[in-house]
Length: 403
Ligand SMILES: Cc1cc2nc3c(=O)[nH]c(=O)nc-3n(C[C@H](O)[C@H](O)[C@H](O)COP(=O)(O)OP(=O)(O)OC[C@H]3O[C@@H](n4cnc5c(N)ncnc54)[C@H](O)[C@@H]3O)c2cc1C
Image 1: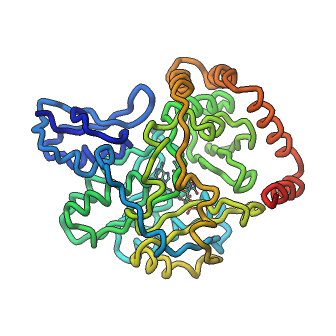
Image 2 (image 1 turned 135 degrees about the horizontal axis):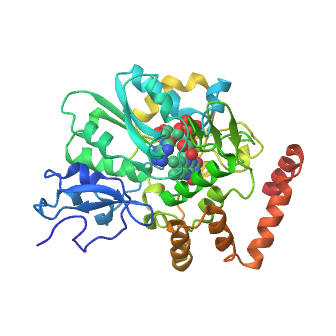
Image 3 (image 1 turned 180 degrees about the vertical axis):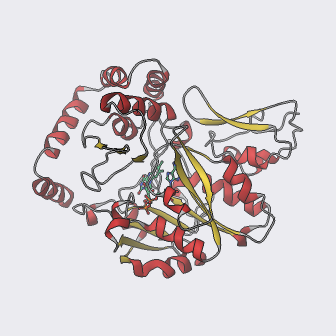
């Protein structure tokens, strides 16, 4: 009987693209490739597959019993890096890079997500030095290619310790794998609050559009969520050797589709792992919500889920302005505990547009035709407020949140 992640029909969830099936396959029968829709998925060479079933053991698709827990014992802080450069060059409050540096000092190798400027993809890599972890700064808002780094760290039979940073689905898979291999002590796991991962085709099309509209063919640094217009105002900043360009804070094609949630990986709509703290030592995110809604420089949410996580944060907390909070305050504006409703027809249409030969501009034109009148009015109202001077805009925002 066929017994692998693709041919077994007993799956209860969709594929996350984490690559753990390929990493755990003893016969190297599984490779990971992008689908036409732009998501990583396994391909199996049936000639090499022995149907041992090991690939299913750490796979979310077959887990009927995802654990929750750690909510009551978790300790939560807001954190703002005291160093202005660190704060500006991070997505939120700059906690990730500080933890990574501390891990290196404590003898860990660190796995984080870098951007490959040749292949234009996000890749999980292994870093051994403080200089190496710099490449992990900043969120790249699409799936990362994990297989090589996961393979290296999980098959290292020495006493080398690893600190692994990733999305909740990636950390879930790592946690399952090290549980099976009774290897837990060597690993420290840090995940992020996660809204979902959009199709790689969205990024590829957006990048082409940016190259065309700026006339720059090669960027040497990209800030995927730069703070140019302030922390809350999502935008990209692209750097080339002699110039830089920041996208507008309204109507950005990438972030429009990202926040509309019409091009996410199928599993992201009802992901249970983003609402579980059972597989991670620390969860990091933005401290969204009314408490910091007028902050413009960035605030991290830090949820310490285990003693290991609590001890590590203790070692770096002097670098931050911190305040203790409840978990409820932290998750109020997060996707944590929530399902995203999925309009299958609209998602299919959006993914078709993104995998077509149409330019980003043509895609947006066709995509926006699907907007209802009510949605158009809502967007116009929101955008018009964003044109006001920042002080006035922040005041209005505060009043709206107080109501
Ligand atoms: C797809 C995605 C969705 C997210 N959704 C939310 C959300 O809904 N709410 C929220 O509060 N925060 C979300 N985040 C997390 C947030 O954007 C920041 O990554 C986090 O707050 C850490 O910021 P920082 O200032 O501490 O460090 P930064 O210097 O910004 O560090 C970024 C960290 O993210 C990791 N990373 C970067 N790209 C990826 C990737 N593609 N996959 C996995 N890990 C990656 C890096 O390894 C590093 O650890 C999301 C991140 C991603 C990648």
